[in-house]
Image 1 (cartoon, one colour):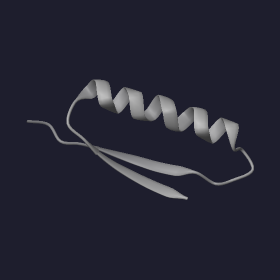
Image 2 (cartoon, helix red, strand yellow; image 1 turned 90 degrees about the horizontal axis):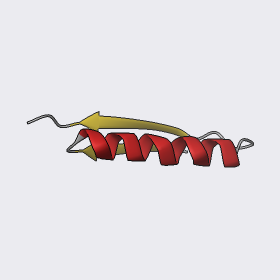
Image 3 (spheres, one colour; image 1 turned 90 degrees about the vertical axis):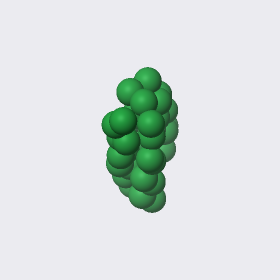
Length: 41
């Protein structure tokens, strides 16, 4: 699975990456890919 997140601040970026790493570890038998796009103002 591939997920892409459009985020507005650094704290959300950290949160999304933390959650996705936990999911990737929990479901190691599945391929989980993600990308975050930081929209800097």
